[in-house]
Amino acid sequence: MYQIIETAPKMELTGKDLRERIMPELANYHEIYSSLFQRREQREQSEKYLQGLLAEIENKSVEAMILHREGDNPNAIRASQQFLGQGAWKDEPILRRHWQEVEKELGDENGVFITDGSDFPKQGQESVGVKRQMCGQLGKIANCQAGVFLSYASHKGYTLLDRRLYLPIEWIEAESYADRRQQCGIPEDISFQTKPELAAEMIEAVHNAGDLRHRWLTCDAAFGRDTAFLDRVGKLLFYFAEVDVDTQVWLTRPATRIPQWSGRGRKPIRQKLVDEQPTAQTVTALAESIVADSWTRQTIKEGSKGPLVADFACIRVVAVRDSLPGPDVWLVFRRNLDTGEIKFYLSNAPADTTLQTLAWLSGMRWPTESCFEESKQELGMGDYQVRSWKGWHHHMTLVILAHFFLVRIRLNLTDKAPALTLPQTVSLLRTLLPKPDFDEELALDIVRYRQRTSHAAYLSHRRKRLQKLAAIPNPFKVSL
Image (tube, rainbow, N blue to C red):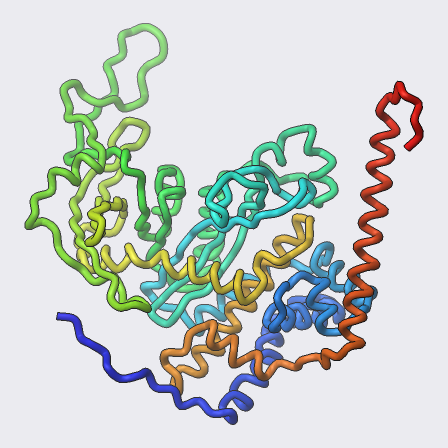
């Protein structure tokens, strides 16, 4: 029987609480990272950029943030664009410090890493890594950039940890992309990496740094189907990975041996299945064989609309690796109560792991989805207008810091508002952030700037268009 919650959550915040507990926090938070920006201008620009990401403006591009704050100031816009797109400051030390701060606020021995992708629709062909590819945000093939992200969650909260831009193989190897690689500033030593390889690289970086406690990793089937990824991260932590419906496993470990040498050619060194061993079965076939009383109803988590509940079953199986038996793992079945749809997961968790723990892990991908939603809606994660490799990573680093700043604020206020959400925290913060005097002169300033830049773009496109047309033979001898 589920307990019905009849009382409204406590909300005892006052205006004084906001002034005393939020107002000084942004400067204090920026000071944590200030020394990692080598130059005074970088420190000033980074604080200004963080404030812009947190500001109440519709678009969080560099232009929009500066126009909102300072009006028509081309020098300020260029300085901010240079800081973001070409700035020589290093992301890695800043992210390392960020992991240390996450440990202070959210760290837990049962901490969960979540890896997932997030895509960003883009126009044109000049932005680094842009290509027609599957765009999760649009749910179809579209022109976009694809990012791979690592998040962290514990019972205290969740936030983003790291990011990588996925480069399609054409961007790395095709000669036709050479000019674009140079213009976008892609490092010469970059080699092609799949999204699971990028995710594994981030997981190893945080794990090897040793700054943030963790035990688990969750991921969707885009990563779970990559057995090399699972084996790589499985050396560091326990994974709980969704897998495809046609994934094959053995119920019992089949016998293998190295074939006897015939006396000719190379001696065999690779194991092979012994004859007449049981064949591997799909997880779907195994689900159909589960008897009714093997299913257990489990509460996954308390959601915004009440408890999230599903039926679960699990069995120990042997994973398949290159047609041979691999590690012993859990195969977990999660059945939707309304539709009957079954999802499948593999986990290298210890054999004595409880079904309750496995059910809990099946619901631990939602924090990264919340991170993306909050960062895109509140912090301009997808609003950047930089085309360079360095600019994309710089922007995402600062969005990660901005998101965690809101997490810190929310945690700081939970004693008086335990049900406070991150979007609600944004609303409270924005009442205190300095706002420009938006009068008719500032409005005219912004319009003048927009018209000037639009006309400059028109002239540039027109010149390129005329040059292209001039190169085409014109048998009619009609001037353009």
